[in-house]
Image 1 (cartoon, rainbow, N blue to C red):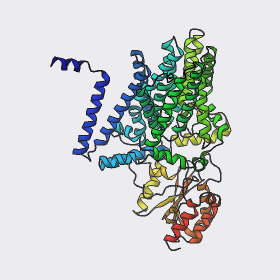
Image 2 (cartoon, rainbow, N blue to C red; image 1 turned 180 degrees about the vertical axis):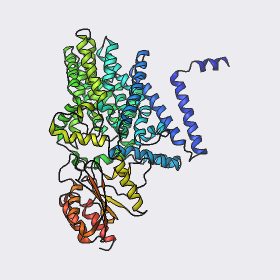
Image 3 (cartoon, helix red, strand yellow; image 1 turned 30 degrees about the horizontal axis):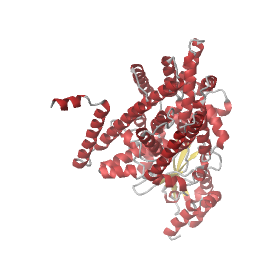
Image 4 (cartoon, rainbow, N blue to C red; image 1 turned 120 degrees about the horizontal axis):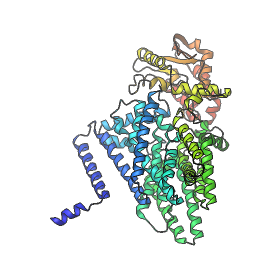
Length: 633
């Protein structure tokens, strides 16, 4: 008996954690069997998944040889509390309507809740059935708790990420700061950690998508895990435990968002080059053998595990379907990356790169630069980055950031005040940067609102309008009109499809309530993504705006073409019903169809899209012909 008690007392924290997670899994199985439609089941699953993820992060730190002492833990808690205040302040001072990508995961969360309400089988089928999709349902497993405890709005979804995503992300980011400090043999650890952790954590494009209800930063949990497990590992010996963690982190980051695959390819290529150079310099061919062995096994396992996604990626022409978002290729991407870095960040990174070469430690700088370059070349073969896709480059940029932090910290006693001012100004600008959908420069509100370059004034004003809507009441009024005048089974169609106005603004303006979700058709704008809008011909009412919204697009944009065709013949098929003044110079008008659609009318509209039809006939003429044949036209 005493021996058993002694063994219980010697259980490691890892064993205790494993027992606790196992007990939690058993409890979930019992709840799922006894109360399959219980409202608490999905939140409990989410909480358990988050606990597993946090435990996995701690195991990554342990495997990587990183220990968080009292100072590190205190800093993490302090910065996390600051993040809570920041998100509360940033979300509370604006009126933002979540549309397009900014509502994508929010809608997925609602759908996941609805699926789990039918029972565990339906819920997990919803999660795993999306493996071939560009947006998988993987993240919803981790964001349901504590989202379920909120008002379930877009703002509350953004805010809940501070609790469901950020703690694990911060722990791993802190570990990454420490790991790079170990590799650089930094002596001034206090200033290095404080500068490096604050600098990376406050970088605007780390939180940009999160503030807009895009939990894409969740994938960085696995990116930082990969860095921690590999940066100083040279395959001197086979470590199965490390390999399992690397494999799981790689699979998970790809499931988080498809485009993280560009980081995976870019980083593993750069890392393999580093390992090869190291093994050749030290004549350690066993490292090459182990690297090749692990690489082959990992690729085979990845293909088997994620075959639906892999096969979709191999067969889908992303460069063709996403050509609409290609703003200029590689040269434009270099320009965008430079803008998003900002002058102070570039100065600090240059300081770090110079220091690493001066001290004959160029490995990290070269690997990070090569990773960014390869990822950028691959990504720009498909499209140019938006603010959320900037996340795939952050692991590489953060390595360069931390080189700068190390250089600044090691020489902090020389010219201390100017260096602290440089770091402080960088962090202050980062924290105060406006996180809006069209943000390209990370600038504070006061600078944006008084931006001196007149040629960009319209763009800046548009960004302000989108981020903090002054026409919210008017949008709700139009949504209520549609709800009152469009019966169940009928639809209305809205032609504008733009960041200023699109159907999603009106469908989502009262989330989580969606009274007109089935009464207002989705929009039509992106070639290769949106099919020819037969809902336009089915709609009882058609809505358009004057002046027609154009946010950073050209006259050939598809909704503009559709609107021009409509204006030319509208009096032949429609009558004016009512109009709405949006209070910002835009007027919405509602037109009611008076003449049933004919083949001649449909062909008239289709003629405006000859170029798109030649490229995607299955999305234009085939759709129109199928619709007309089904109605005997």
